[in-house]
Image 1 (cartoon, each protein chain N blue to C red):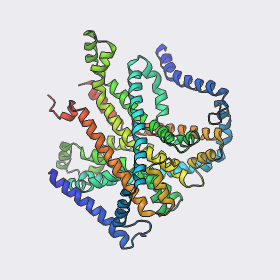
Image 2 (cartoon, chains in turn orange, cyan):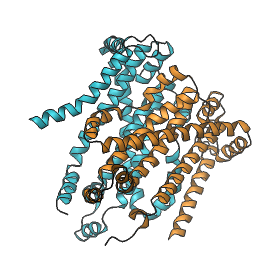
Image 3 (cartoon, rainbow over the protein chains, first blue to last red):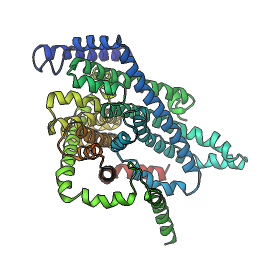
Image 4 (cartoon, rainbow over the protein chains, first blue to last red):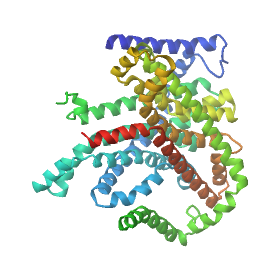
Length: 257
Length: 259
């Protein structure tokens, strides 16, 4: 079954690529707007042999990783602190509900004024956007703690820190991991958007340059790169999630008694 | 009564505190990038007049609505087809995973090639970004329809549109709404960015105009408008969702009460 699915998937991918080759060749769309797959592929190969492409890729990944790390640590620390202290969760709920839906791109003009086209303006966007994903998931996760387990830990005389470590954290971890996975994807979108709009160095800025200089195949090749990057990040995040939750029922797939 | 007052205090205390901090911390600010909150609020009514709301906010909202609706129709329709047939799903899966992984804003340059810089471009950009979460969630939801119910429906001879509407889409709807919710925030982001690229009106265009002309308090009011807009749209979404999924939330609450 798995093998058959993989074969069908490969066939689908091949058909997709072939369609991309044939449609412009037949003149169904203009070749200068939508170059055939082979031309995108050769532009892709050119990019790979270009040193400045790798620098741009490095810049994008730096912005992504740094922003994600800041957002995840802040989200977890604030999330746990807010839900452990009595009343703090209720007191912050309205503020969180208000700030969360504010689109992160609203901060683009501010970022430009404050930091210009530097890494820091990309970081501002990335951190703001991915912070909420982690925070909300952490809050949900901490809420899910089994009161009986918590009371048991209390009656055994475990302190606050030990209870966070042994009761709260294992319960919240699956939720936190989902938040991290979502945040990783959002962080990539915002990193590349920031570069595209603000012009901070990275793949996004390279796409903007390719667009302005009418280098259409290069533009498509770079877009494919961002897609592959997104795919890689998704797969990576899922792997990390599975590793970190190897003990958890959802991953072990044990039959519930 | 006492509980109500306590709740009200809890809800309002932190926002009030934050606004107060902002107000007083920025009161004597001479930094051009951080104007006093008082100046921002005084500028607000001058900038966002009824005329500007009609000329800039309405077109933005119209594009968002058109793109979002298009994405919802296409996403649910295609998602239902893909979710219903195992083979189709196997063929499409790798391509869909790749297309979903492409960050939506990079499509703006591509779509600009085809559709120019008019409204068509913006609606297409919004739709092409919003469609993925809706489509993939629909696929998952349709896949997860209870097979016992499918068999039951078959044995009762429920087929065609009524099977689709009352069984498949109904039981997939919690998932579909999760996708719609994700798509909403992507849609707002794309609406703003597509207007920052090339436009002659719209909220994104206006804010960038202010930023380029260093009209900093005006720019801040634009950020506030976007914040309010994002908040209001998510509020509207919650209301719609609560009505559409009332049966589902009721079901969950009752199973939680009687384990």
